[in-house]
Image 1: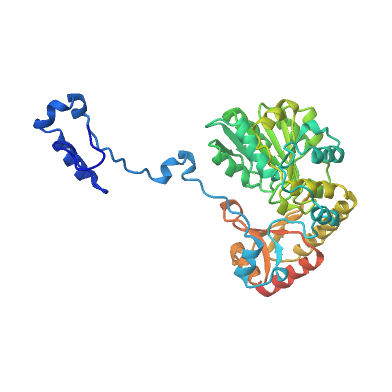
Image 2: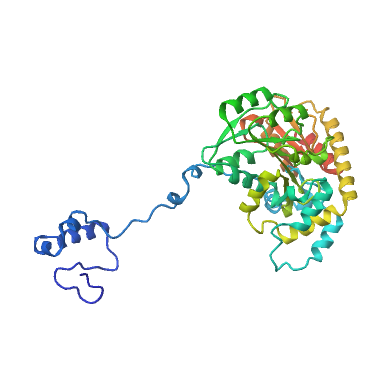
Length: 419
């Protein structure tokens, strides 16, 4: 038996505070020499291994499919952007993230200032907010689930439906979180590219459904980044298929068509996602919600984090819904400014804008001597931020969020300097 303290008796292993694998192996072999062989069974002598185990590399603890996952590239935080550009935040015209420049109704700030019980966990069912959303949408609260932004609900839907190597259909160019979360959840992504005008290629979608048997398909209306709408007959045709359709309506308030939230009562394979980020100017508080068939929502309730919507987020969202007149006024202002921005962009010789039903406009940079990426960088030096994408599909495009009239003027002033 090995001694744990004092001087080791003859024939036993001696340990120092540090011992190398090689030295330990040598001493172990010595211990199992002929003079000690009778004291150790042959089975142990034959399989003797060092007792010191090498530490595993940290990456070995990570699930294999995540080891090569490219991180999602978000927009830079305002304070980081301010420091990088050497400009005060108020001197930056931020048209790169589709944020609402008017902010929330004044009732929101008042409600946050008077918020009670921030030390108590929030209602895990967000009952007050879901009741307000039911009144706002005309859909029963039992169909509504609230999340920490619609992004949380996208991931939750995948976690509840996808098994390893299930397939998700994506229709790029579109919101890149669908592809990102598919990779995070270990599923396969099948892309059905949109037509040149960014409309859905419905025949190709139907063929892909038949061939790949996907579990989910993500559709966005209006689509990000171009602002196009999905036609009703196209959506109905896809809903006839054996696939769960997730319809992202993050920008529907700026469109000429109503939301399809109430459709979930009639279509067991439809989920509709919405957000407070654009309509109510609450992007920083992260409040999203979804409409679900009753046959699906019960299981999402079981799997969601219990306190996923903060007290502040629920208070702010409810206060915003209390002033729908303000929300409508801001929407009208943004739609009017979108139309003005589009008309002005038509006169820029090296840009081709696409008609949009959202609060942004996508432009193709058509002059071969100009780089869309460089144009974004040059505008940033003038304190105007627009969105550029590094992927192949959109490398010659910039996306411009709709701001206030003075933001549009600042954009064109900067464009005149760098063009």
